[in-house]
Length: 462
Image (cartoon, rainbow, N blue to C red; front, top):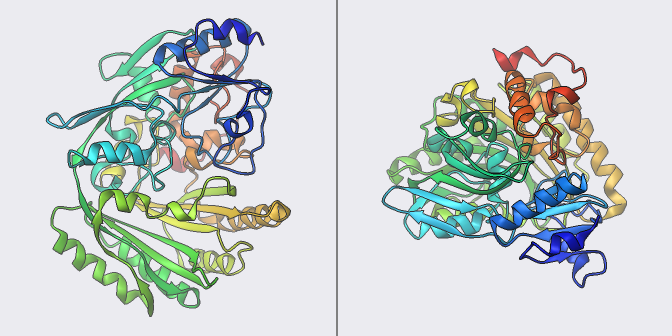
């Protein structure tokens, strides 16, 4: 790899193994990922991204692309190759009158939220403020506002992208609409996104927090949670359930509401019902700024922690599934692990399946087992527990998975992430990246490179 030929047309900094700060530059959120790129090219401008992609094509290499670097599979970093890093591209323009924001893709959600909240506006972001805007949105974008506003990708108006040929193009309803559709959930398969334009909503004060119960009451609490969430909640209210441990190690079931409606008294009435699920041991729910809610889970997922995930969408939570969930939570090997049930309804569930690449549009739950731990000596124990938990819950799977929750060993599940939308995504991939230059991702291979695949679960196309 002739890095000097890239340096001559690149305005940003390029780190190689002999550069001061190289080891820090190659680190990403998941502490299990320890890869050593040949070069990390920090783009300052979209023109730098163009130069880096053109260089990759000339050198016939397959770059990784990094924005927030929060993906659990470590897709943002690659051994011995090139990393195109857009994390320093953090410009954002907010048009408060039109309620839109054009954000460069190096922004983290916390940074995006600070800029939009200055105008009393927000859009659906992630659950952790240090997650990158680009990665979350390109994979779909599940978040606290999705009941009222839809997913992050439902609120995108355009994408600026550098394609595999090194061309800068825009995708919107009127420009390259096939690519626009594919970018609404198709992840990083189509190029280097340099900016995304979002629709915004007038949201400032919300109600959120934790209502905590002892895990000993977990079965009853989760049954009441299931009945409550499936009873027809208003779009403005999202409620998750998670098993987390208190600082003293006590395992708890935490019910986590997020109310974003304008009538806060109505939200308080709904949230008060959560106190009836069992014997409350702590309740931190209160009115708070939207930015506070967006940072509420940050302490549970610090940078550098070791992490391994498994995930499934489930349409319902029968008693037997709840029993399995509680049984595995009770024997979790790490006190930092965060197993969560994310209920989806409202605007996110009303979008027709074929309107975006992201296909999971029925009301239900996303089971995400986020195993988190510090000691490398405990890798095998935590990974084994996660796999066993996931396997035990598979009987209730809806046959689908959120692409942003796939781990490094989940490559065979990419079809599962897209279901009946996969073939249309493959056509877009074949058109915009026929040589599969962008393959360091949960990859959708071009048609000519596509191996035979098993049939996708029919539940996705129902």
